[in-house]
Image 1 (cartoon, rainbow, N blue to C red):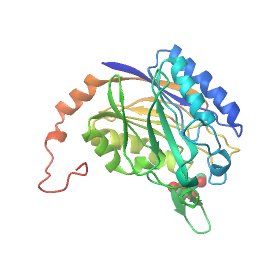
Image 2: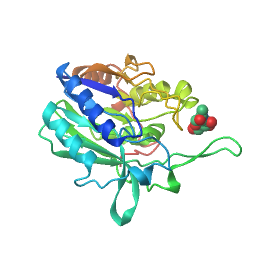
Image 3: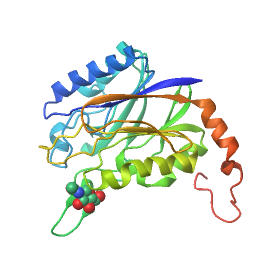
Length: 275
Ligand SMILES: *[C@@H]1O[C@H](CO)[C@@H](O)[C@H](O)[C@H]1NC(C)=O
């Protein structure tokens, strides 16, 4: 069983409306090229930065982005992992939230970024998501036609436990909308995807916004797909574009059968993080 995955490396602007219109056109284009599962980047409808979150935030139910995403998924007849947008949630708390939609427009899942990106190097770089955002506390998976898929956001990829738990719960892929920067991008973006892929013998995909040199936060781009053997099977540069890869469940199974780490674990020596 296979399904074609499309990652949309969207050029995000300061106009939410323009971003929603552009996202829709790209989702439809991906569907026309045969994609069954389509992914948008982290903060696909707003610039990325703590100062922007409250301004762009919207509720999960009946907000403009949720309505637009539901319509895109339904009109394109695809499974849509709707990147993320700043959500104003219960008790007026803000979250960095990914919504997942099915081909009939129903919402299949919600992932609120679990690991917030806090970094403070005195005199250099300060970026504290937690000054504005609250963290989610769930591991998110949904059922696609080719099996269970797990979803994390950006910094979540650095925590192997999340992907490992998803894999042990039966996921054949992890998908991360994310925006690494110009330092951590070249160093870690691909390496982390390959690491999570071979740790768990699953597909790993990460979808970034296109690079905008004039933005406050400059994203690395390079949206890519890694297969269960750790090979990069699709990769973009820094510009707006769509990249495709066929996810093949049989290849997940052969990879796991050929190198049987999943049945050779020693839970008598170390704990099973999925329990
Ligand atoms: C990117 O983020 C890292 C921390 O994850 C930080 O050390 C670095 O200075 C940042 N680089 C740029 C170009 O902003």
